[in-house]
Image 1 (cartoon, one colour):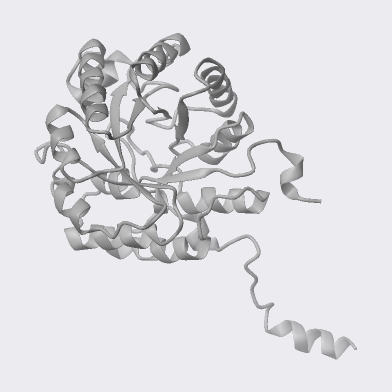
Image 2 (cartoon, rainbow, N blue to C red; image 1 turned 30 degrees about the vertical axis):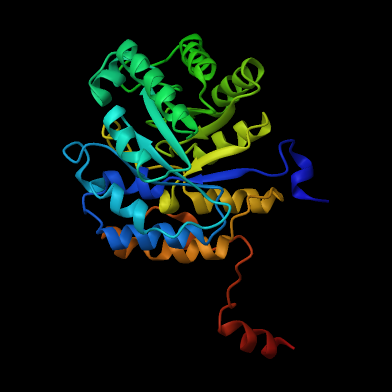
Length: 322
């Protein structure tokens, strides 16, 4: 009997690989442009539906991604892969549109304090800016996704009201956003909470693409992904090697590891379109790229059915008993 028969969820999911942006932006070592391009190209060969290649943020704010234009111009664009970019403001959108992204990802927080700390704006100011950016991107013919941060909890305020999250999601969906990403920005989510919000979102906004963005700060990343999948969610953000984090979550271990997520779905018989072997090859080069060890359980242990040689003494021991 198939392992997937024990659980109910979609037979196929899409993985959005965010390590080139969400992962590399927070690394203390600035990865050179050619290293970023090689990383994106290696990921492109793995079969991802989407890759978030970079961010068009001010070089003062995030110097690690100051080469966004160069990265977008130099990567190889594989058929079937949508190359997305994060855009924080209208100036960033102008820069991004000149590089022909397949989608732009705009961001704000569901909680007031985090939005002020992260974006230096009130939520009302962010909403007004994002609505203008949706209009500008739509005029250029580029789809928009909105990432809502701190929807499962805020490191400054604690719990975040679901009504507030849904009000933001509804406002942006009605304004023309093709998709909404619900982000567990600092790893505060837990499975029943994730399931409840995903169910409410899908019931209220069935025509809007839903993506779940999870962190593994408290070790519940895969459990939360499974909870979302069981409600019907088919799109997941993840970062190769578990890269990433948040400056407002001390001790954060990063995003859900892409290879761990793909491996889980593979074991369940859920199709991702991602070649796990090729992905592990790409992940194996990350320690050299970022100059440190990475948090990848699968890279350390290998896939579930990886076998090992039994102890050398066994053959002689049991032969002597025969």
